Length: 195
Image (cartoon, rainbow, N blue to C red; front, side):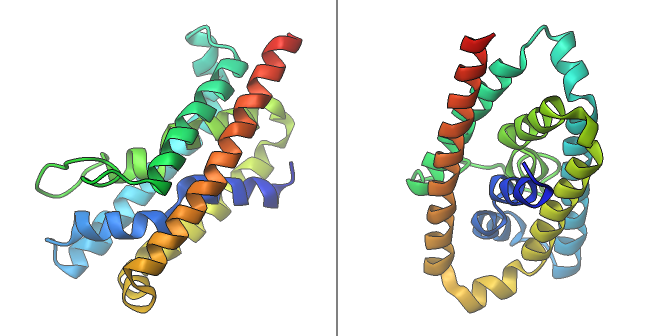
């Protein structure tokens, strides 16, 4: 996997376009300046979590006595479910009912930006080729930067594109995530059967 393909994969998993309507609804009661501050904080928390799993993911797996194949299979299943919810969103929204007040860590940083599938993806990248950690950090930073740009311009994108276009893009990204999840699942099963 090249650095660019890893960045594209992570960008699809982070799903910034699909998160635009969710983030707007979560932040709608805050003043614009506070919205930007909360968004920056949540993006940095998510980046920290993903970097933690990139560098310490193998140690976390070893401490929990988990094999990489199980993470690949679990990540594929979770990614599949997220993709299905993007294609066929439930009536009460992608995350269900959310409490009032300013979001902190949950649900914006985790699981919307740094979700289980993103954590599994960075663990797998680091596990499959630990000699390329620099490439994986670069790929993560590229995907995270593109996500940050899109989320900071969420209000503008929502006005220009409208809810219907963003919904269509979210469903298209959901289809891509379903395809990626099936591939992750198959790779995990193949590695398990080979081992």
